[in-house]
Length: 285
Image (cartoon, rainbow, N blue to C red):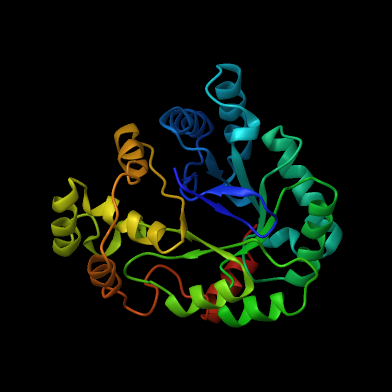
């Protein structure tokens, strides 16, 4: 596993395991335990996913079974928009998440969306960071202009910005902007949530054949090779094993360019510029 050093000095695995859309507690506990056994050390959850307790139970079980230690793990969770109204609300949300996870600290706390009073909320998670409740803080879905505004204003620069990044939405200019501020990009949906025929894409398949890898592994490696942390999710053990098995080869510059050429220049999963989407998120409880 390759690691990337955050602006706090903390080391974050370049690949992790996401638990979005695994609301069933028993299933979530099972797959997180399997992921840790498979070798994943970065686990990404959120208050909004409704499965922080299940993640915490899986972690406790893996530690009790001697598979890992808390220090080896990198645990991320996120503050949802409903708690992004005041500094105190965001700070208390961090403490609530830690209670659900049954942990003394998180490794990374993110603001989940650039909505609500995200400046007040960011002050709240900054307070949590200063008190040692988390090793690093960051944001998710903060597009370039909003991230720039935040970085030019706040006391503690975000360590991570988790955004949609995959071959069909490469976001090169966004990555350049993050790099300028020392913010590490992290990809949600690194396999495009299965869209665009990504698993059978002829060019990805052809590149994969050269290395004995699948199209999915090529898509993941492409992001990792350009310094993007990836958090693929799967409930299937064999897919988990395949997703993490990308560290024994390197793509050529020509192959990297070929994958990047698939970029559509826009998302076909979510449009953060759509007022209807913002209203939808702001009214989710």
